[in-house]
Image (cartoon, rainbow, N blue to C red; front, side, top):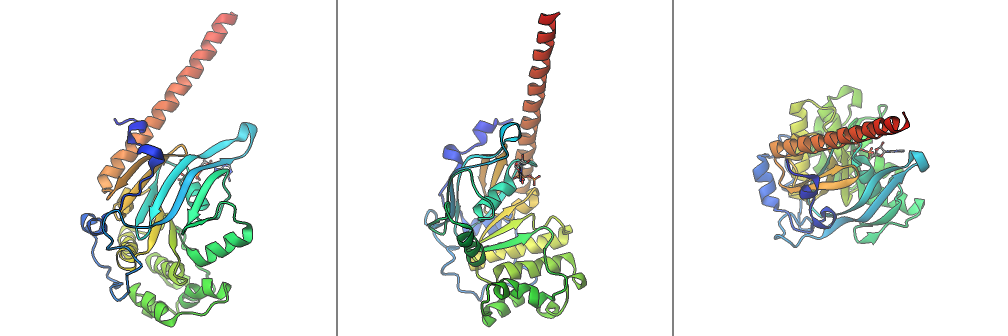
Length: 320
Ligand SMILES: Nc1ncnc2c1ncn2[C@@H]1O[C@H](COP(=O)(O)OP(=O)(O)OP(=O)(O)O)[C@@H](O)[C@H]1O
């Protein structure tokens, strides 16, 4: 098995290499979504067709540290994480439970404060942003997709999609709304409330809601965690299309190696650090990698227990 050290990329797993936008779709074997396609959209800002090495960076973390608690309760959730996310790339954040995936996503999205380090969002250093600035950043530049959809049950699909604009007191771009609705195949669902829709349909509404304000980055937290395999594939294909055809930047936390295979790149965290960084991840490769990382963690824990037990035994023996 590869050691964790050898799995890690140099300099904290950062890489500014361009991702091959063509290869991602091809190697993942994804097809155009049944629901529609974004081909009508101008993708100049996308960078989706940018040659290798020329994509701008949408989001960057430098030496990011996040601690929770104090003293005995101190937890190092992120330990000096440095990573860049290219504009127009679809990136998966993976890792065992408790490895820091949510913490990384929340800090990058300005939802959670950091202990030290720096976060550069769209060229802006948001590290010292106050609450008001962070609220504005989240409203204007960030879209969220959640495992549990988080749609408001008393509102229909149209009202849910409009919600970020309603809250920000902004006008709806009718053309953009129509494009999203057509592309996501929601034309005949707009007057339905969440309870009247399938999980896949609800998640498509949530994707439209995340996109309505044209965010710079979309953060998706286990977006297929509550979906069956058919709906998962549909949602992931749509997300892939958003990246390929709109140049949307998406950062997705997932446990699912198949979901990761739809992305351009997968980063694996273990114990608050990046231990692997793969372009064009394949499902089997990611599954094997995660298994080996878990085995390494279990092995370390077992030897720590063994060491502790041995120390206690030696102490008892010396006192006898
Ligand atoms: N609010 C908090 N207070 C104290 N510790 C926390 C808090 N949030 C997270 N942690 C700890 O930080 C570490 C990283 O947690 P995090 O939720 O980011 O991991 P994760 O990889 O997203 O886990 P999971 O896959 O189970 O959601 C864990 O040890 C967790 O217990």
